[in-house]
Image (cartoon, rainbow, N blue to C red; front, top):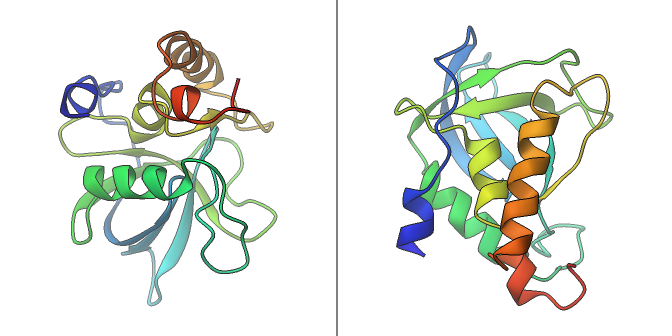
Length: 155
């Protein structure tokens, strides 16, 4: 696993965005952050769909807890990340939508897919990185990384 984490995709130079502090990792594609206003806010990583963890009202899916744990290791509580918007600001559940970058340049949306912890999920109008994410998913599938090797019905 450590070798895969080291392969995390560095993103483009820091884009204009908002720097926030990670309060918690909810699952493999959702963060709870501080720094956007007086209250904590949920942030959904654009372009990806991680398996559900089974927490709350979700049904546990293959590799859901692993995806959450991996993302928590990449963006631990108290760490700083930069949120970069695309065309749409919020999803239908009111969560802020963002591309998430660590200060060291790692593009977390891409790293989650590259390491096999999520599938791509393209929802217009947020398509800026769709091609890049789809290419990373194809490589993760071909290499049977993460859920692509662990989950029977992933392929």
